[in-house]
Structures are given as structure tokens and as C-alpha cells.
Image 1 (cartoon, rainbow, N blue to C red):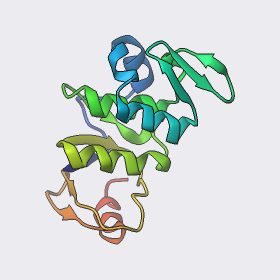
Image 2: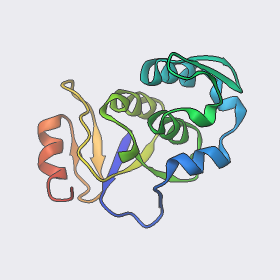
Image 3: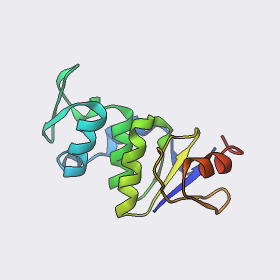
Length: 145
């Protein structure tokens, strides 16, 4: 299940780019979930754990991935921290929901992310309420963002 805390969160990692670059494991890059997310979000192909083929940059290091993909991988694979998902665009929202289908995750947001038109289940930690669609999310999050 996905839980969100809106606003300033003392223990959250805000600079996910720097954190990822200094903590990711090579094995994360070639996991099927990562390969799918890199393809969908960055339109790039994983060649191996050290090489991503980007249509813009050519062969590149995983350290050159977008902030959104880096944050998604941190959310999926580093369960020791809470990450600021405001570094992600709305194109990452579906992936956050997919990760949350398989494991409990907590993210921090400083904006209202668009989780789409389908129903979902998200717990808002600021209030303890569970929301099931964007209308309910807007009502709950509006006080905090």
C-alpha cells in the first residue's frame, strides 16, 4: 500500500539524485522493474548494469538517468529511507502505484501528483485518511500543498 506524507518531513531524503548516485547498487539497474521503468520514463534501454542507451545521450552511466527514475528505484529498492517523490513527474505516478501493489511504501510529496483516473488506495499520513481516487486526494492534500 502507498502512504504519502505531504509537506516538510524531517527524515525524508530530498536530494534523491545525489543520494542515488552515491548509494545505488549495480544489481538494481538490470532488475526487470528497473528495465521497464527506464524504458517507460526515460525512453532508454538497459544494456547492462553500467550502460544505458539513451536516444538523447547515447551510451550513458546509470548516474545520468532522470531524477524520476532514480527516485522510483530508490523507493523500490531502498526500504531504509523515505524519499521526496516531488522529484518525479506525473509520468512516474503509475510506477509508484505499481511498486505499492507489491510492498508497503511511504513517500513524501510537496505537490499534488496526478495518480490518474482509475481508483487506487492511498493513505494520507498527515490525516490518517485513506483516499480512493483523485477527487478525494485533492480534498485531503489541499490543506498541505
